[in-house]
View 1 (cartoon, rainbow, N blue to C red):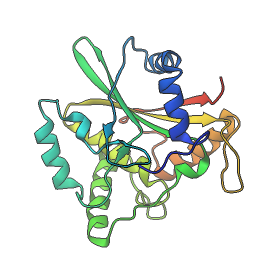
View 2 (cartoon, rainbow, N blue to C red; view 1 turned 180 degrees about the vertical axis):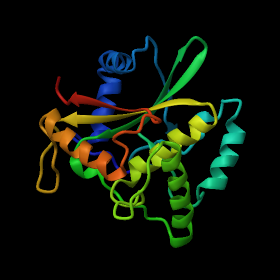
View 3 (cartoon, rainbow, N blue to C red; view 1 turned 120 degrees about the horizontal axis):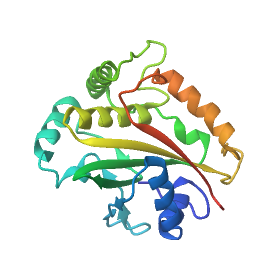
View 4 (tube, one colour; view 1 turned 135 degrees about the vertical axis):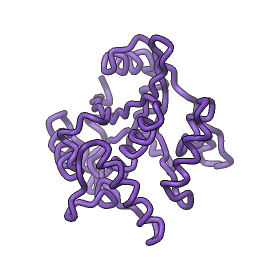
Length: 228
């Protein structure tokens, strides 16, 4: 968890929406998912003096699930446990007919946040590549040699792996990518001022990962203007 920017950035705006505009935020989520309830998990505390909070990491949000230990064991077999794990911007759940669906949130405020490469060492990288290839097969697509999932859009790729892992273990989950509109624009920040600009970049990302036509993963996009 990096140091939060004051007045701009995805972390700042997500905190605003979930804190100062909670009802509007919850209504947006409910409308998007066609649900009537949502519960958000708290972050953990940390000893960081600048920002004494810690994002939810990896599969810790499943700790109270009856199948947690089995899923955790499978994850440890398939995914390296050294280095940085998945850090979630926000996690919640909804319940319908006694069935829980997990809501995993990632937030972006500028185009640069879409792109990152896997920084794992060579040994871990091979394990990750194997896991991502398995996921691609499970969701009915393939990874092209000129667009590896460990490059460019690696964050979304490893989130898709988590969706697939949960699905294989009969855990319902959906990933919502939140895209903020109208954030601070600087020399190194390309912050879209409309949905159309975001969609151009999102389409590039989905085409690179070859997931445009996959119906086996639940990924939704939510666009929020920073001041409306």
